[in-house]
Length: 356
Image (tube, rainbow, N blue to C red; front, top):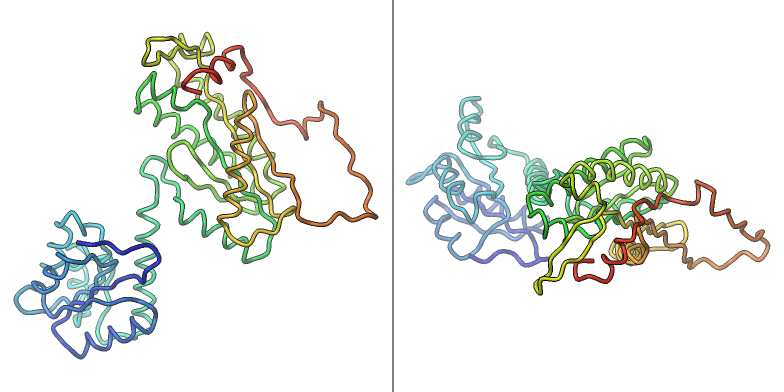
């Protein structure tokens, strides 16, 4: 069974014993950019699945040999297509028939005769829900990469000012090495909660939070919200992560990590590195460009000790010769300086050791 390659049209499997309905549905789906597989019975549909995996199935309930309920049950029992979105087509408008279809594992139903525009809308909605559900992190419940890129693309299209913050836990590998992946997941969950509280705290306009994977998170917000969100997240996560260490490690302020040669390194407790890209200084044309700049700034932030936020200040706008020169803020100005806690001697060991 071959999955679809990225960028190809989504494939819809249409299963109905009425050739006229199959033809009408196929023509309309193809007109709207979908690829179509057709079958006139349940067994024929199962045979097709041996060679190609669709993105969604439209299944008629009333068919000879194997009805739509049994076909739906078999699809749900197949590990390769168990998450396949299924829309049942039924000539019966009785509630009991609809309930039976949903109970068998269908995601939606359409009563014949149906309007083709409704059919296309339901197909697209089911595909969108399935895509988002597959990308939601089972650990944090946050949206994944595709939803993050779409959020940035929407801001680009709208022409509004926005900022993208790329958040990463420093020395997270050391936590996994010392405590195991179970404890590491607790740190990731703690950061997710801290980031959520931070984004909610700024109010409107609403900030978006996504989970790239592992210990990487992305926030899309208005540029004016960056400092409040990042400061809140840093303080909140530091308090939460303190409680996740063993008491001896938390009290001395570092972890003891043994490398494969048996050498013990003192590795500082985790901090956050945050890279920020803003639309107010650069004209981005694609979401990937924004993410690349935010990622670059995140790597720059990792060069500094403690929690650090690196804001991209490079500009592609020509300077205005009539504009006054910018005034440098004093270092003590809290509006210009973000928190940089946990700058200890063990930072040096962390940077030179194998687990930095």
